[in-house]
Length: 434
Image (tube, rainbow, N blue to C red; front, side, top):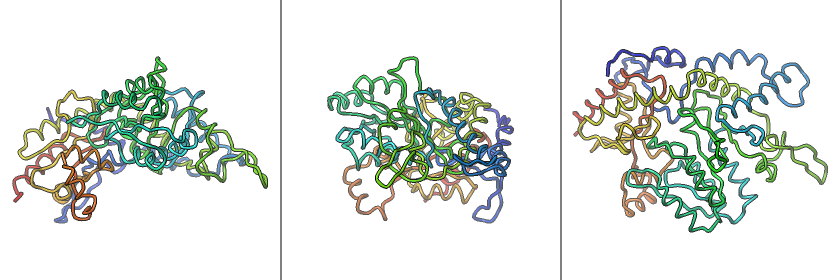
């Protein structure tokens, strides 16, 4: 692979892409961010739009001033931008703004508990805690297992749906794993779920920024019912997330939060809720967050999500090929270059704790990665092959026992030269380990 960089124009899009950071020895070097699965840096265009919109920012809905009307129009028109981006029917679905994916899934869990008390929710063993824990306190939850590579077992999905005889109301599945990067066959899963009378929720936090998603399919059976994702993973800060789903669901359930903005009429003894999405967006909305998100979508559309996916996977495969040549590296995912995934690479160095590896990468070369279990403890426990005894020990000695993995996650602005720096640093760490 030639080292002629073709990413310079993409790096120009990113705020702080070439900022320098201090190493442990005090020397300044360009920061290298391989922690994009956690949070991406903002697009410069997003920051420019925020700054240009800020003088006109005002409270929305019911305000009569020019700024209020301008802000209200921008806020409401943004929902169509969201629908177009994920290819859903805006007449059938509603776009609800939240703080992040975690809040979106919690919101849906409260709505489902209002509508489907006593039913069963089917999650998977590869989920982020945000697509697991909100359901545990409200429903009986069963889990689809993963195979020895950590890939979702569709045969177990079918078995679990048959086992529960139509009592499963919702199948909750990640679009792409935040640990291994595997893309799940969400349209095939939707068809399977619908054939058993269940709906499907896709946690799109790791998929939406990297790969096109089509909520509405030609076949209704393959369409996605609910989608949640976060702007902070798609180059847009300011704390905004999205929950999309059928309007009827939200019409029929009470909001989990009540207060300002959620009602049409209140008297001493009567409350008439607003229509969705108003009834589901309590309090003053995050207009600047929505501005950031729609601005980021404009850039992503211009770049083309398919092109972004290819670019990121080129970097991923370059890094994967280099790492497979290093001694004492264990990689915790399918290493076939044609594996259907987003650009996430989990690994460990034999004999070195994951936290130590992550710290050394930062101290020696200014490389940012994430280490640990990535809010997916049951999944990482399986990938690491922890025994029941080790898992039980972890329950009571979590302050002393920290199993985990180092995660590399690539963004559209990362470069081959940055990967070369990573590989050189890993060689030093491996050579000097005791």
